[in-house]
Amino acid sequence: MVKAVIFDMDGLMIDTEKLLVKYWLEAARYYGYQVEREQILGIRSLAAKYAVPKLQAEIGEDFDYYKVRTLRIQLMNEHIEAHGLEEKRGLGQLLDYLNEHHYLLAVATATDPERTKRYLGSLDRLKYFDQIVCASMVKNGKPAPDIYLEAAARLHVDPSACMALEDSPNGIMAAYQAGMYPVMVPDLSQPDEDTKKLLYGCVEDLSKVIALLKEM
Image (cartoon, rainbow, N blue to C red; front, side):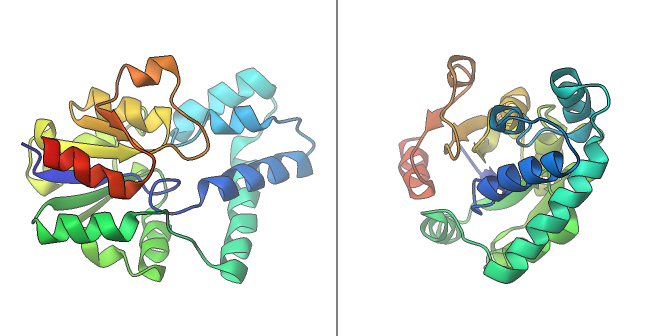
């Protein structure tokens, strides 16, 4: 029986993955790096310790991940300040259902704590969550299971009683390795064959998660 639902944030609850990709590409090209969209898609939810060698292997050993990332954050912050944030379809309906049925809720995100709270607070969604766990709070970020195990521990729930909601393969791998029920809500790409093998379910928007919970 599922007692807790743990949410990724970017691309799952908030429509920010398109901005992350746009501004990663813009920042990388500003510094003269030839980067393809597929390479940025490949680092979604990926911790820096894994993303750095991956991108350097694909782009070149001189790729300065942290310099590019700093500019990406600046550009994205400017965009958000000017245009605000959009939440993903079905989020409100799902959160209301989970609240009414007394599920424990946590966020497990690669984004830092300050921005996580600011983003969710700006949409009035922060109040729904019992715990916020960010990659900076654990030894290993996604696709390692640490962040999901930490979220379960803070909720005082066994990982086997948790459903994890993700939009990226790296996040699904983390949830699967944590022993949870991984559910994908695709954003910028559909699950590949390897990711499909790890899924408990795959739904088109967050409201459809309610049906999965009712079936369990």
